[in-house]
Image (cartoon, rainbow, N blue to C red; front, side):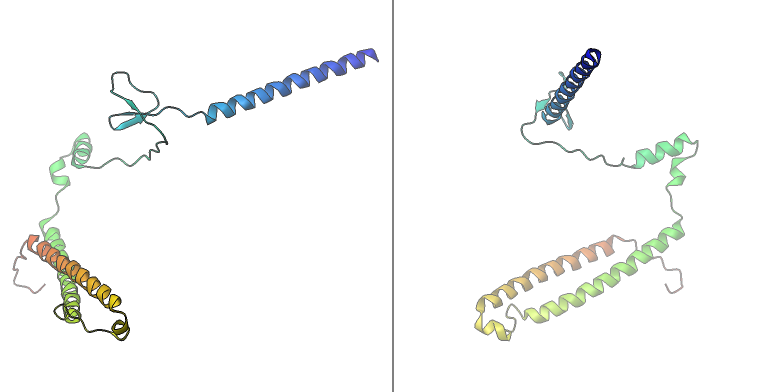
Length: 185
């Protein structure tokens, strides 16, 4: 019986020590995760391990979230990948002249349609604008502020549509003139 009591007390002691160790580990891990690390800005890079020679400055307050982007596929990347394969990078980026003419023609048709739509909208707005004196609606006779707000909105809409028309005309002017092939497009 005494051996059983001794054995039971040693089990209790081991369980108490294990419980104490578990509580200590839980408290340590909670403290380690809740403690904020210092974040440094070194030029355009953010790090928690600053380079002593990198002119790094500590950030105060808040945290930094960095979202990784995709690599830029610029002309250098395209030419280096083509040259690495043994081919020529000059011919790889070229488009057949007939294809390019077709693309230009399609772009011109789309821009012409957009310009026509913008000019129709501009004409409707100008008609409603009536040289800065749009006709008052029924509710605007009793509420002059509503009329003033509508006049201001019309003015802004006219400025926007004028800018749109000018931009579309600039884009059309940038396109090369269609070559006359004798056939209708």
